[in-house]
Length: 373
Image (cartoon, rainbow, N blue to C red; front, side):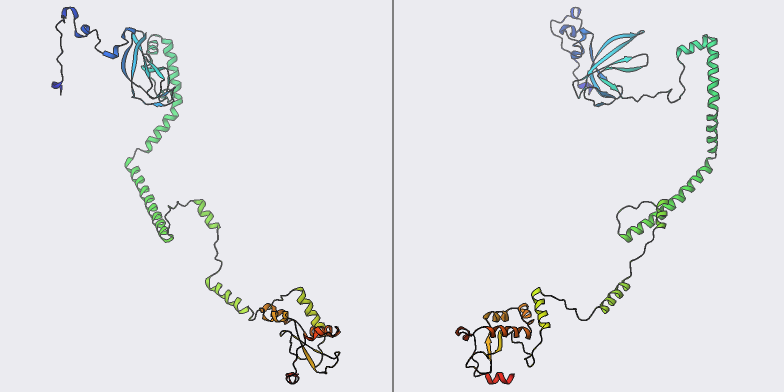
C-alpha cells in the first residue's frame, strides 16, 4: 500500500530553495501542524498515555491505566541534567483538568493536581524483601570502616533473629522430600473421599426421587445427627384403630333420639294447669278443641231440654286448625280441664238473643251424638 501514497510534493514557481529552505518555511507552517500551535509558549501537544489507575477529582470516576489523552507538554525544571516535564490534559468525562509530571529520582510519574492515584504499588520493605543497597550507602561502606563495622553487627543481629524461621522452613521442606510417597498418599486420600462423596450423592438422589424433591440436599453435620437422636416420632394411630373407634362410637349411640323440651312460657303455664286440674268422670276422651267446637249443657236457658248442645267456636279456631304443624301442636296442649273452664265462663254469661246465633241446631243428629256418648 505504500506505493499508492502520494509522496510527491508540489513546489510552486516562486519557491527558492536558497531563500526558503523548505516548503514549511515557504508556507510559514510547522511540520506538526495543529500540535505546535502553542509552541511559542513552550507548549507542545502530544499523545499522553495514563501510566497507572487514577480517580478523577472532578467527576469521581475511575480512569484506567493506558487511556490516552491529548496533553500539553512543557518543561518545568531539571533533576541534575535530566529535564522534568509536566503534562496537562482534560478528563473525557468532565471539564476537570489533570496535571502530572515526571519524577526522575524515583523513575515514576507524580500527580500534581486534578486526580488521585489508586494505590497499587508494591512496598518492598513492608513485605520484608531484600532491598538493594543505595548508591550512597554503598559508597559509604567502601570508604568508612567504622560504618562498615556497625553495619556488620546489625546484619549479625538480623541473622540471629531469623535462624528459628529458617529452621522451620528447612524442616517443612524436608517433609516433602519424598515426592513419590507423598503423592501416592495424597491420591489415596482423594480416592477415599471421592468414594464417600459418590455414595452420599447416590443416597441423596434416591431420597429425592422417593420424595419427589427438586431442591439440593445439604450435607449432614454432627449437630444435625445429635438433634436427630434426641427427637422421637410416634404416630397418632393406625387406620384400623381409627375404624374401631368409629364403630364403638356408633354402637354406643342410642337408637332413639332424646326429645328436647321446646315451648314458651304460656305453654308451660297451660301444661301446669292441665296437670293440676282433675278430669271429670264420664268425660269423653276425645278432645274437640281441634275441631273448633266446645260442648256444654244448657240448663239455665228456659224452654230447653236437658240434652247437650254444641256451640261453634269463633272462626279463629278454624284458622288455627288449617295452619301448620306448629299451631296444631299448640292446640293439642289443651286439656279437658281447660274445656271445663271455658264451659263455666260460658254458663255465667246471661242469655241474650245474639248468643242464639252461636248455638248450632243439631236436632237431626242428636241421636247420633247420644250414641257416640
